[in-house]
Image 1 (cartoon, rainbow, N blue to C red):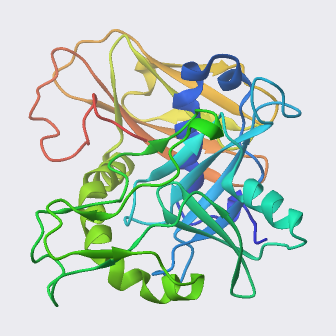
Image 2: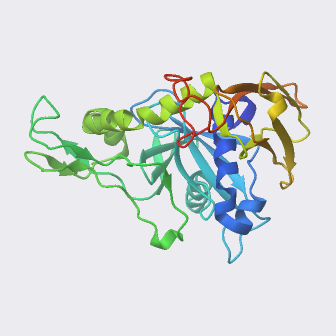
Amino acid sequence: MESIPLAKLPDGIWRRVADHLENARETFGADGRTARLGATAIPVYRPDMKRAAYFEIEVPVRDRRTAKGPASGFVVAAAGPHDWPISHWSLGAEPPSATLATLAKADGNDIERVYRVDALTYVGETRGELVARLGEMPLQIRWPSDDPTAGRGGGSGAPSRETSDDRPDATRPKSTSYGAQDGAGVEVSAWESWEQLKKGYREAYAPLMAALAREVAPAWENHRLLAEFGEGIFSGRSVRVALLEEGASFSLSGDGASAVVVKELKRPAGAAAIELVAGKTEQDHELDFELNVRYPSGRKELLRFFVISPNTRSETRASGSAGLEGSMR
């Protein structure tokens, strides 16, 4: 099965996943406190895309599976704006690639490539043949005319939000159904084979994939704005920032640097994070600052932030930042 080091991931994915895990820690109690990112990522494909559409990153939680859950959870991040930035994740279920590998091994097979064909459906493939499947296959859709939007009120089938599923496997929904809201003239049927699904995937689901891309566009724009203009911190409040490697050195620069205190947070081996605490200030404009991080591997990061107080003019960054309440790094 393909795998690549996190450092070789396309720009932004490692940072996005690390921040997601850091922000989710407090929600999951003991599992959240021990969770860390694995060292590699598994490329995950979609039949209508030539390059990897997603990357699955293992999240080790405990030494071995126990009654409390699996040894590892996972995060599946989209490689581009065709799906939610964080498309699927769980600390209570093992990585889809690991489940597929177990299923394939039971039949004497290995897996060369992993596909995600629906919100909760993954396929393991070897030499072009399906050798393992997790979840139910979506049905083939035949639209009523050459115009795939005709005769229907809209499509469903792509996840309507970032998908998190921490329920036991037996109670998890197996698939997201595809279809038209009014069903007029739409025909659905089972695919005859894995090969047929791959060849017909684009035609069958293009309207739904286009709708999904439109739905997730604001989330991707939010990420872009945060990278360009920075994340806001209200005076007297704080934000946690995941570090990509242990042993990193960091410093602050810019007008707002003197208004911020950096606290190192206790994290499990293999993880690291800091907290940026903004002092209580009163100013009529944002105080910009930058977090400069240097890692033992030689990797460098520059993350932008700004401090805002109750007296800050709301029009100061009128069309810039993605905002404070809705920020998503």
